[in-house]
Image 1 (tube, rainbow, N blue to C red):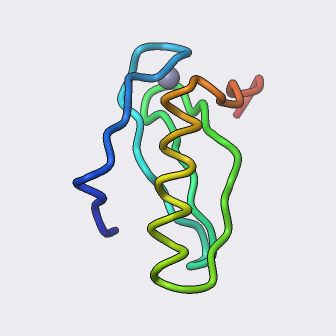
Image 2: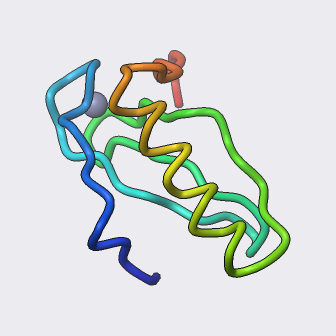
Image 3: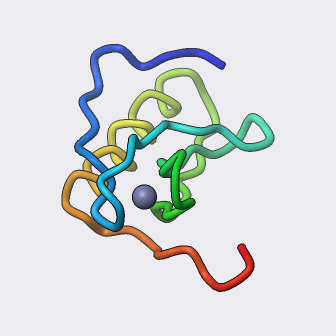
Length: 74
Ligand SMILES: [Zn+2]
């Protein structure tokens, strides 16, 4: 997985854990907590430029604490 070193992520709003930018299927990105599994909505992209922009958007959502808490059994 490629790192986004210039994108700052705050601690997880749910548990204070570490957020990580994840990619799925080569078409969307989201931020997920490595500890509790809370995550942002996904942003899709179609190109390398859109990919970085999508990563910035999910990071912004994460930093604004706009996350989806992990459901039971997830
Ligand atoms: Zn968490």
